[in-house]
Image 1: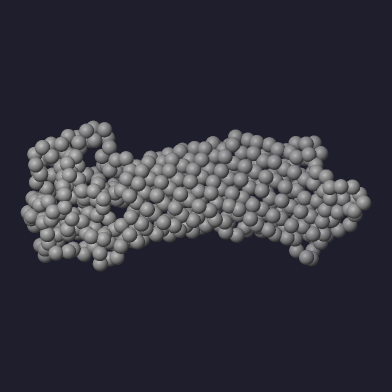
Image 2: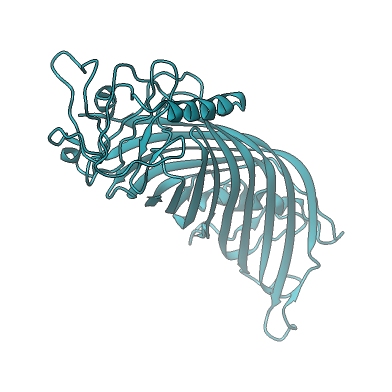
Length: 443
């Protein structure tokens, strides 16, 4: 029996008049406050077990806390003397929010509480009587009295970076590109992601989320043949007798956000909020000279470091893509926003003379910063399988796109160490994608 069929099993509750009035007053105030989801039509009664068989109906009973199957070949009867309230061991307790012919009033069953929404309580074994008609307080997946107040997700986020900027840095003796920055292709980087959601109304929740993924560490060396190599796009550092060279890179992405979530339909939840994203990146080139140059240098290194602190608002949609009443569901997420980016970069260079020609030394570092408008987008698919009524295992795929940011390879060519100046390039982009897996707990 799926969730929709279960919902059809229950007809409207005949309740004491004072409880109906309390419930009607309660709902009237919430309507005036604009806290109801649009499109109210049918109440949800959901019995979802950790295994498909757990959702099957138990023998009929008029005692609170037992499953009653009132479905027949011709559909639910107009009246019956029992109600589906709870499936023992189910993933999520069913809830009936019902009323008489004029108002919504009713009984709510949760895993930890059984209560009248008007404020009174019903105990196990209480007799309940229903009559025809059923009214909905909130569309799926938001259910008044069914959804828990708190939801916490703890995931491991594993990301790959796939679009390193193309910047030729070393040329071979024939003038061709021997080593380009986009040849780095760093391996997977991982980090934690934590989300906390607090339901404040049947269809409204506040969500906070944070993740930190690093180090995106990559390495690439010059080929063994084709030299001597010449340096290019290193500003005023010009050498054409490089024998060996190596690139190393590292990066980190952090994000913190606070969102307001509003259900607007049976499967759609809209969100809006504030987000901070930080992208820090560093790339270092080290090289050894084939012959003693006029300065008698043996080796050198050049490093470019960038930072981007992005602040802005975002809008998005969280949609239920698959939910057949069992323990497994699939959701899709998309959100994007325009951000203010405080970008900065710092470039350094140093050399090690040949033995007997003095100690290592560094050139004066140069730096620059810029205020930039940037874009941040995120999309993903998440599959959730409920292991217990309060615990689920999550597996998903996520991707992130940052545009209008400063990336390290594009800063090398801007440095003028002789003049002690540089500028900053903020036309870069970052594309990350990968897997996420973890646990979700609700209470």
